[in-house]
Image 1 (spheres, rainbow, N blue to C red):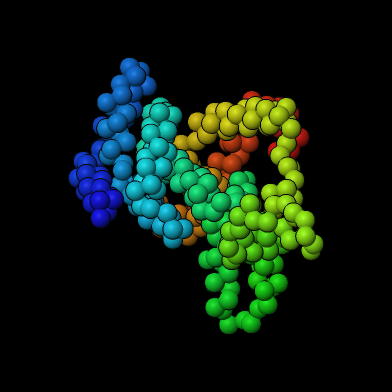
Image 2: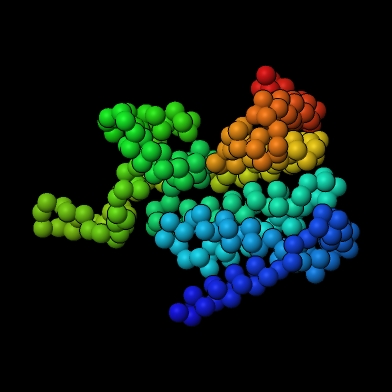
Length: 289
């Protein structure tokens, strides 16, 4: 009851926070960037806590507490506020949505099960969409086998059938203790399941190299995104940088334009990104076509 009351108080405070007009948002963001004004950053974050609460509701089916999800989302929100560039002329809510969702997804993957799954974008998409797609295919008019369902999901999410089968088994099965004894078939000690695990982690030098490469690519992408206007940024974030991936129709309704116009803007934005990325790293020209 105590946690429930705390959740309600948190939600009540967030819902009572005033909305920010575009010019107010820009002024606060500029104060944070230019003067390290912590109060300005906090005002931006508090005005968007509704977004955190709304997003947290979408992840409650994983059995985690609402308050923990909101706290993780708040961390993502503060990260977005710290990184937000007012000069891009993009609304903060558009920019913050990605950080909030990413923070909550990482929290779910860390805590949903003792045994962690993959953390790549493809594996995350598989984890968060497998149940929904499986249920949708199973309820259709066609009578599909489990193998056929796995194959269709693999195509839809761009992963291998074996990845789908592995994740499906993991989501359907129960966790087992690594300290559980292994039956030796005799009188001696058969050891524990932990003894059978092999370490497939990259070597330390490989991990550092991957981390440096990821930081470099992230910086390239961030600089390239600065070349987009607000509408292009919104479309790219929704279509290409979101695990769910909005449809052309959805964005058309949201922006008040046709889906063909959305496609044209997306194509133009991708071309801008390609030019900007190749300009920063000419080696990318080899894979940009």
